[in-house]
Amino acid sequence: MVSSVALVMVLAFEPTEADVMQRPPRWPDEPMLSRFVIWRIFFVSALFLVGIFGMYQWMLSQGATVEAARTVAVNALVCMEVFYLFSVRYLKAPSFTVQGVMGTPRVLVAVFGVFALQLLLTYAPFMQSLFASEALSLSTGMWVVVAGVAVLVILEVEKAVLRRLGLGPSRQL
Image (tube, rainbow, N blue to C red; front, top):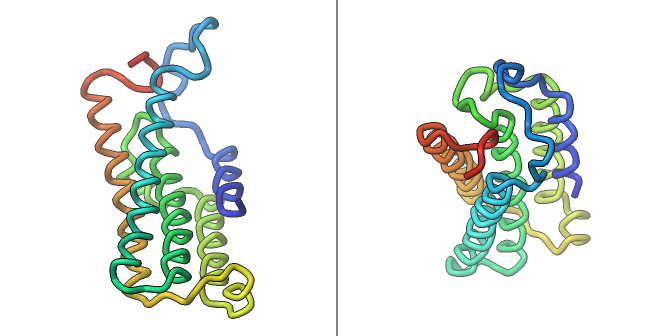
C-alpha cells in the first residue's frame, strides 16, 4: 500500500505531455472506462500476475523457502510498480527518452523512498519477523529488477504498436 500510494501521488504533480493541448477533448458522453482503459487494466493486471506469481513459483522451484519466495513476490510487485510509473507518465510518447528515464525530482524522490522501504522490508530483522520475509541475495534482487524492466519494455512495445495502428487513449479500440 505504501509503495502504490507514494508512486501514484507523484503522478499528480507531473508535468503534462507536450502535445496535450493539441489533442481533441474527450466527448462528454464518452464513458470513463473506455475500451482502451479496460484493455490497459486487463493487460497490466495480466503482466503483474505473470510477473509476481512467476517469480514466486520460480523461487520455489529453485528450492527457496516460502518466506524467500514471498519476499521475492512482494519485491517484484513493487519493482514492477516503479517501472510501470515510468511507462504510464506518458500515455502516447515513448518513455525511453532522457526525460522519461530521469523523471522529475518528485518521481526520483518517490522511487528512492520506495526503494529504501523495500530494503527495510527485505533486510531489517524486525521487518522480517513482522512480515515473515527473508533476506534475498544480490542475484535474486537482480532478477526482480529484470521483471520490472520487462514490464516497462512490454508496455513500451504496446504503446508503439497502438501508435502505429492509430489507437490508444484518445480513440476507442
